[in-house]
Structures are given as structure tokens and as C-alpha cells.
Amino acid sequence: MWGIIATWRMALEGVTQSADALMQGHRAGDAVVDAVAAVEDFPFYKSVGYGGLPTENGEVELDAAWMDGDTLAFGAVANLVDIANPVRVAHALGRQRYNCVLVGQGAREWALSQGFADKKMLTERALQHYRKRCRETLDKGLSPYDGHDTVGIIGLDKQGSMSVATSTSGLFMKKRGRVGDSPVIGSGFYCDSEVGAATATGVGEDLMKGCASYEIVRRMAQGMAPQQAADSVVQELEDKLMSRFGRAGDLSVVCMNARGEFGAATNIQSFSFVVATENQPLTVFRTERVQ
Ligand code: SD4
Image 1 (cartoon, helix red, strand yellow):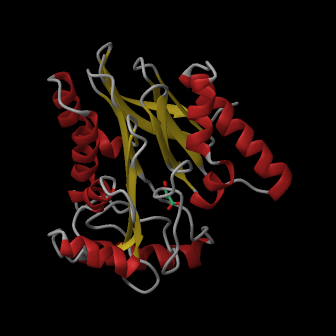
Image 2 (spheres, helix red, strand yellow):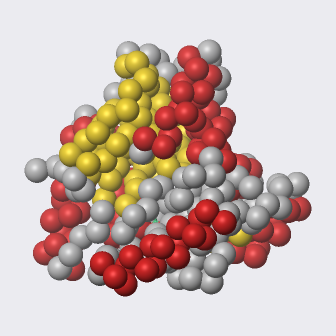
Image 3 (tube, helix red, strand yellow):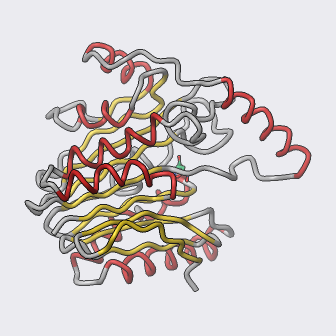
């Protein structure tokens, strides 16, 4: 069995390539990194990689992670500035025994020392979009934290290994130095090849309150089907946040188990995700708010 599942329609091109690779027997670890890197490279996606929106200080600070479900090894970067393909840096960090999570200047220096490309990640288009959003936020009274799509991709290869990778420029209008769930193990992603994997997108501050991805994998380990694990975690976290915190941000998740069965859940009106497995032709699904 092989399979791949990703948050948001924007992952379609990357997933298409990597689904082929998995079908041909390539490893999940590389397949998820390549698929995420394709999203990072596309200049018009405003929330991931090159062309991502800047912080208030005008810098694009990127977060990314990678995890190997066989060894439980993982690597992550946060607040990485002007390095191409943060997910590849996270992947390289995931092969280190220590120092596998690096942030800010330290992450940048390490990436440069390893030969990663120094690349200006802010585009003119992103800057214009950022300014427009700021005006709209004032004019229309929008929340400054609306609008943000992290890419998270889970892969299962024919050898039975699973892997997950994430990448994001974080919440729109985030402060300099702010870190969301996407590079945080257990919250933005988790992967165990013996069970399955999960990855999240939405308001990191809220996803972290429930360690959403780990919680989904834990429920699958106890025998829950992926869809049930995804639904129950989103619903219970939303209920808990509403009753204890008075509000709940956007929470969306995808997951897959070691048999290639998958699930997705959201508390927003419509959340798109992309999936392909040995039994499921490549499809973009839209799922609606869990009731
Ligand atoms: C974050 N979870 O930085 C990310 C943003 C995101 O869909 O996923 N948006 O909090």
C-alpha cells in the first residue's frame, strides 16, 4: 500500500508528482519533502515559502518541519529568513542526533553552512498583498489573523514507512519571532509508521492547546479509524476552547493510518485537502465543519 494526503488544494501539483514517486516505490521521507518544496517554490501561494507574507517588520519568517515515522526522528526550523525551501532544511536537521530544532539566526547560519541557498523570500506581489490586507483589516474590521494556509503532507510508502512534512509563513500579520504549531512536534505534525500520522492547519495558538496531531495519532493507536480520530479531536478541542477560553480559532486536520486509510476534519466552513492512495485516485476533496 502507498498513500499521500495533504492540507489544501494548493498542494495538488506537489502531491501529483509525489504520488507517482510513491507508486514507483520511492521512499515516503523524500516524497513528502519534495511535495512540500513544490508548494514552497510556487510564488503565488501567500502563506508558504517563496512569496509568503511578511511579518510586521517586513521579513518573511518561515516555519517548517519533517518527521520520520520509523525512527521518530524529526527536524524543524522556525523564523527562518531568506533561505530557499525551509522544508529541506528541516529534513536535513531531522538527520541530526542533537540540535534538530533551530530558530531564527541560528537556523539561517546552519542552513548556509550546509549549502542551502540564500534567497530573498519576499516578493513584490506579497508585499502589495500584505499592504492591501492591512488596509482591509482596518476598513472592514477583519481579524488580522484571518487567512493563512499551512501545507502539511503525509506519505506512506510501499515499504510501510510513513513521513510527514509541514511548511508555512504562519499567521497573517504575525509578530516578529512568533512561532505557530507547524514546526512544533505533536501540534502541527506527528508520525509513527506503526500507527499513522496527522498534520494540522489553522490558528497555531489554538492547535497547540490540544497537541492536535499527536492526539489524533494516539487515538488511531487505540484503534480509532482515521476519520473518527480527526472528527473527535477537532470537535472536542473546539468545545473545550469554547467552554474554557471563550473562543476557538480555525482548526483543520488531515491524517492517514499505516493501512492508507485517511481522514480529515475542520471547524471552518470548507476545508480542501488532496489525497491519493493505491485505492483512491488523486482527488481534491472539500470537507465541511464537523457537526
Ligand atoms: C500557524 N498553523 O502558524 C499555522 C498557520 C496555518 O492555516 O496553518 N494556517 O499558526
